[in-house]
Image 1 (tube, rainbow, N blue to C red):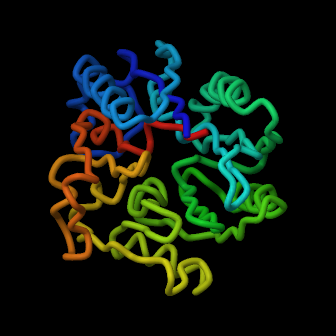
Image 2 (image 1 turned 90 degrees about the horizontal axis):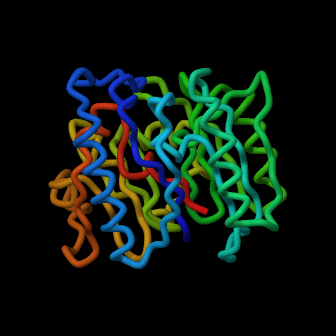
Length: 269
């Protein structure tokens, strides 16, 4: 796995966010947090490709929303790259540079672009095993979700549309920490269950945390480790008590104020 990341610029202070403390965003501190996150990933053996900051794009550090990559189930090579069409019009200019980088890293991949009237944010997509859960939210509409579902079907994935009404993205409350393991809040799993039993069959393990710890549901799994915000690994139900050796805690408060978390800052290829 290689991750495409982009440090924040001073424009982060104008990021789109509904967080009550968004006015406290400190771009300088955010840059330090981002750099520490990159170091932690690289120390675990994850390859990171850094793009330059975008001085006129407040949310450009959240590369996950711009590009999605899929290998065929059971393979490791990227076979499909999807260029999203973010639900916030101000974010659509972020896509081309991340897409160009993704295609340099996966030159043989097929490319699909989400088209008008569809909108799709990468933060509304979680991939686990052969499943792709797509949140239909304020940022991703049904047209965009169905375009993605049609794109991934020929590559061996089953796609499910999940309603998201109480948060920004599906991944705000549920993320994948393995092909058969998900971590999320009860409301996050409720979104998944609304798509039908096939979206989360019995063999998929659920690590449940309290709704009050929703920020802890955004966990980045890579290189056999879980990257999460401090205190997350010991919170919630007893089922989420990750061994210390598998957890890397990263301070990302400035990005939390911008409605982001560990998965939001990376575009895996």
